Image (cartoon, rainbow, N blue to C red):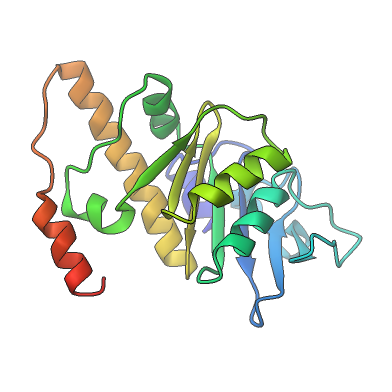
Length: 197
C-alpha cells in the first residue's frame, strides 16, 4: 500500500503513516518516524500494544502513533488505520467546501466524512478528537493537515482514501466552474443499508 499511496499523490516524501492491528487485537505495527511510504521494509515498522507501550525498542514509531492507538481503542471492528496528506481533500477543507458524493463509489466507500478543526499534529488532543469522530464514520479530515481512514482490511482503507481524494477533486472543480453537480440519490444509501453493505 505504501508505494500505491505515494504513486497516487496521497503523500509526499516522509509524510503520512500506516498501521495494522495484528491477530489477537492487542498489538499493532506502525511505520516508523521518517519512513518514506514507497520505500518500506521490515525495519520500517515499530510494534506497539494498545496500552501505548513500544515493544521493539529499536524502532521509533511515527509521531502520529497516538492517532492510531486511540483509533484502535475506539473501533474494535477495524484492523487498518492510515494517515495521509491528500492535497485536494486538505484544500477542500481549507476553503470550507463540503466534499460531495458525485459517484456511487464515493457514497459506497465514504458514506460520511467528519472534518476536525485544526489541532496540532502528534498530540493527544488530535488523537482523541480523531478517535471520537471515528465512532461515527470511517473517514476524518484534519484541517490543514491530512486525513485518517480506517477499515477492517488494507484494501478497503486504500479504496476509501482514493475515493476521498477523487470526491474532493470533483468538489473543487465544481466550485471553480460555479456549477452544482447532481449527487448520488439518498435512495442509494438506503439501499446499501438494507443490503447490509
